[in-house]
Each structure stands twice: as C-alpha cells, then as structure tokens.
Image (tube, rainbow, N blue to C red; front, side, top):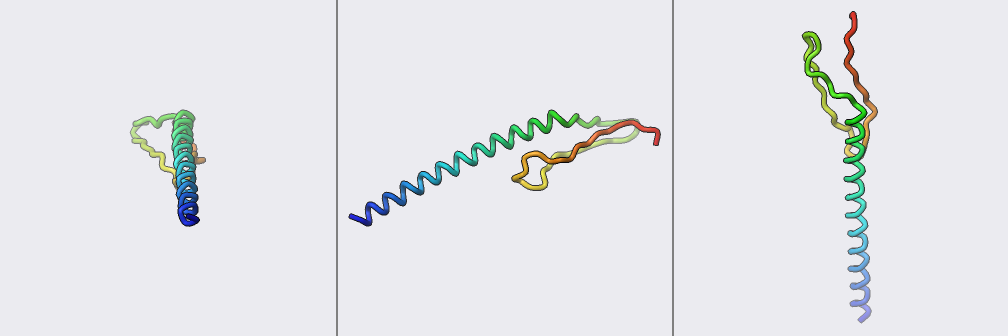
Length: 80
C-alpha cells in the first residue's frame, strides 16, 4: 500500500513539474517573439542598393537564449 502511495506521489510531482516546464517554455517563446518584433521595429530596413553598393544584412543572435542583441546598424552616404 505504501508503495502505491509513493508511486502516486511521484507521478503527481512529475506531472506538476512537466506542466511548469511546458508553461515556462511557452512563456519564453512568447517573450522571444515579442523581443524579436521590437528589435525589428527599432532597426530600420537596409536599402538594397546605394549608389553602386549592394547592401545586405541578417539578424542572428549569437546565443539562443539571448532575446535582443546589442548591434545597431545604419547606412549613410558620405564623402569618403
């Protein structure tokens, strides 16, 4: 009888921990999506062409758990 009670307690604890982990992962996915959307709004899109110069860019965080990177870019015309 004691073995059944302990097994039931372990199953209940496992299910509770699983639920918390899933909820935490869902929250992180939502937070990551919001952070990416905010960063894309802050960064202006790169022009495809500027006077004989083709410009391109990509956003790839160095680490997966980082939500927003610190790199900001800009393209300007200069006399140089």
